[in-house]
Each structure stands twice: as structure tokens, then as C-alpha cells.
Image 1 (cartoon, rainbow, N blue to C red):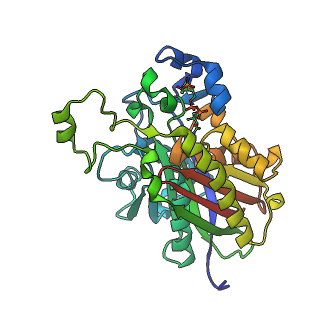
Image 2 (cartoon, rainbow, N blue to C red):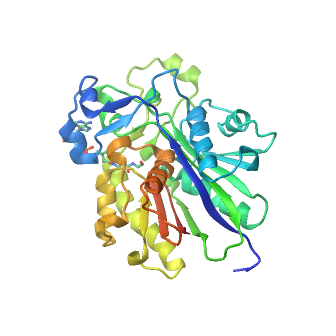
Image 3 (tube, helix red, strand yellow):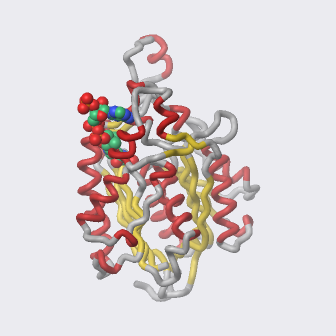
Length: 338
Ligand code: UT7
């Protein structure tokens, strides 16, 4: 590595979740499901769902970003680039990055929108890392935010998907440092588009325009609800997580025992436990908060990392690993010397 090169550290994290708590019991009133099934299969006890009109994807992102900036000890004006990851933007276009630029009053800085679903935050972090290393930017906001609840099929028909997902946002300020002992060590990104439709929301989009949906007026057309082949996604997830974590560790000459904290995408508690067993990690090495928030896709890692920091579970010098897997399929990891 070029020693004059800057390194990228996460200088501050923040998160925001809507006030409205939806417990598993509340879902029993909407669909044929029950607390026991949801807990056993996913570990989820409750999630936050936006009360319509109260929050937006961009707005939650802005709230998380303001906290991250404050926790970084920075001023809003220090931010020189925005990266926003979501699969549930306020608008079909433009993406929410520009809404953050406007809301924070950040002159005309660049805003990039990332569309990598559950891996979106780690993909965004990887982009930020490269910009910092080349000296292009000094302080980059990386935001993951999701407003799933408005678009879920909340009937028994959609229960395999809708009980899992929650709303919220998390953000990081990624900053340049000259300290050679800290920072993002490496990031690893993957995709496998052959499985694109195994976890997807097909329409309305250019493959299924609104006109076509309205013309067909087919009550069995569920293409405008998220679809997930749960078992199939699960099987791939439990293979790809350990694989991409090992890739990061091997790249840096580390072993699973060296990890101080693994912050996996909170997809399903069973998946995280599977990964923990496969990699022989101790309980204190793996962070989980899916019990309280469900799966918040691009927001899940930054929310989890924010809480881990608040709970004092990450300190300077720790080896922190983030890993994600989801729709695309895409999967990714990042290894950080905190
Ligand atoms: O975040 C990105 C990546 N996403 C993931 O990693 C998610 C991966 N997949 C999963 O987490 C799991 O596959 C699920 C939690 C989605 C589903 O768990 P599963 O153990 O794979 O259940 P299943 O889909 O095989 O369904 C088992 C049974 C079915 O009934 P029958 O056919 O056995 O009679 C379902 O109809 O459970 C039924 N079921 C439900 N029952 C009560 C499905 N959803 C529900 C529900 N409540 N919400």
C-alpha cells in the first residue's frame, strides 16, 4: 500500500427509526400468522413501521445523517459527498441522494444513489473508501434507509415476506485520516444476476409499465409486491456470508478468532446463528438487533453498528467486520480496524 495514501475511517454513526412499534401480535390481526412462527423462523419480535405521512425514506435518511454528523464531531458543511442506498426511494426517479443534499443545505455537492438492496450500505461504504483513498473527498455521508411497510402485501397471501421487513435508517460519516493503523482495510463486492428474480419487486418498471398493469387489471398479478423465494434465498445466504467474511479475513491475514465484532446484515436471526456456528464465533463476536427492528435491508447494518457503538461494543483498535447478502443476488463484506 502507498503510505502517503489517506485511509478511510468511520468517524460517526447515527440511526433513526419510526416511533410506531408493530409487534408480532399486531400482525395476527392483519393476516394468518402468529408470534411463535415469526420468532422461531426469524427471531423477530417487533419492527417499526412508518405511520403514513409521518416519515419518508429520504427524511429518515436525513435524520440518521444528522446524528452521524453530530457523533463524528463534524459540521454539516464538512460533508463533501453523499451516497444513499435504498430499494424503497421516495420517487421512482430521482433517487433520494439529492433530497439529502437539499435537506442538509449542502450547496451543490454530488449525490450518488446505490441500488444493491441488502448489500447497499457495504457497496456504498466501498465506494466512499475509494474516494477517500484517492483524496477526492474528505467526509462522505453513506446512508441506508428503507420504508418497506407501505409496499408490503399485508394479507395472508404476503405473510412469508411482510412479517420480516421493517422501516428505518442508518448513516455513517466516512472521513479521511493519515493514521496508518486505523480505517477500512478492504471491501469485497459480489453479484449473481442469474438469481435476480428470486428476491425482487418486478413492477411497475420498464419491464412492466403502469399502463400494462392497469390494462391487464389482473388480481393475480402480484408483480408490484416484493417476491422472495425464502428457502432458496436462505440457502444461498448461509453459504455466501461465511464465504465473503473469510475473503475479507484472508485478504488481511486474519482468522475468525481475530474478529472483535461481526455486524451482519440483519436478514434473519437464524441466518446469523448459522453463520456464527459455521465460523465458530462466540456470542459476543456477533451483533444482532433484528429482534427489535426486523429486516431493514440497506439500513440494517448502519442501524446495528450505531447501536453496537452506543452499547460500547466497539472501541478504537477493534477489528470490525460487516457482511451482507440479499436481492440481486448481491453480497459484500468490509473489514475495518476501528
Ligand atoms: O434480506 C435479504 C435476504 N433475505 C433473507 O435472507 C431471507 C431468507 N429466508 C428466510 O429468512 C426464510 O426462508 C423465511 C423466514 C422467509 C421463511 O421461513 P421458512 O422456514 O423458509 O418457511 P417457508 O417459507 O418454508 O414456509 C413454511 C410454512 C409454509 O406453510 P406450509 O406450506 O408448510 O403449510 C408457509 O405457508 O410456513 C408458512 N408461513 C407462515 N406461517 C405463519 C409462511 N409465512 C408465514 C407466516 N406466519 N408469516
